[in-house]
Amino acid sequence: MVTVIDTNRDVRPRHPEKEHKPANPVKKKPAWIKVRAGGSPVYEETRKIVQENNLVTVCQEAGCPNIGECWSKKHATMMIMGDTCTRACAFCNVRTGVPGKLDSEEPANVANAVAKLGLNHVVITSVDRDDLDDGGAQHFVKTIEAIRAASPHTTIEILTPDFLRKDGAIETVARAKPDVFNHNMETVASNYLTVRPGARYFHSIRLLQQVKEIDPTIFTKSGIMVGLGETRNEVLQLMDDLRSADVDFITIGQYLQPTPHHHEVMDFVTPDEFKAYETTAYSKGFLMVSSTPLTRSSHHAGEDFAKLRAAREAKLS
Image 1 (cartoon, rainbow, N blue to C red):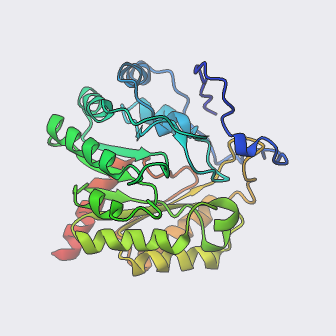
Image 2: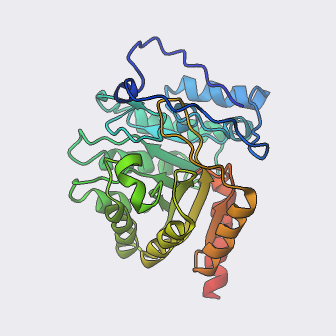
């Protein structure tokens, strides 16, 4: 188990919208969910670079179970536009509230950290910024451009919010030509009202489809969590919906409950069931599938990108 200590002196409640919700006891994790703890010299070096550049990482904010492994390899997923999200998804451990102003220095700071870490592949994600006219689309573009200027050989993967009701935002980001455009569905359609109430299932499908229409060379990617009460048939339908949008890569991981006030874990899906999802997803035409209990969107992203590119080349040859 990895414990992230919050040294922020800000006393704002982290999840104000969840404060008065009934508690759901956090279930004991099964034996197959084991993670590597942090603390190695390389882990500490990664942490120092993140701190020196005043960066936020989803690794810390979301309490990712893979932080020990990833940071020990100098792999960190940068989270831009602050640490406060305007949404209140029932599964998410990122702070909820009214965000501050965008940091104009952030794109340069992210680019500097990417260069110092020597990353061949970087994942950039963000909080939802419904308060901004473009949802933060132009800030994504500035960050992509800054990384390309500082590290021209680094491939860039972005994991974006849905830019709901932000006209032109998807087009703005897609035209910056990230190597991978990831937008997570998070869960099956029937769970949206309880798990992801600020989002719309078919808007997210359409977003991924639009990216391919704008630039078919961009790899598209999406991920879901299981263990939120979904049925197998609903997961298979979601796969079909993603393939109808020509999505290349799907990730499937186990939902782990951050606190008693978050959505409860309805089921711990076994490794054999994850393997069955992987086999089915490949049969439906995905170029790349990652389906394990500890799969997360940016886990092994660099290695997976190399495999994704190779799979496309093999398909076209």
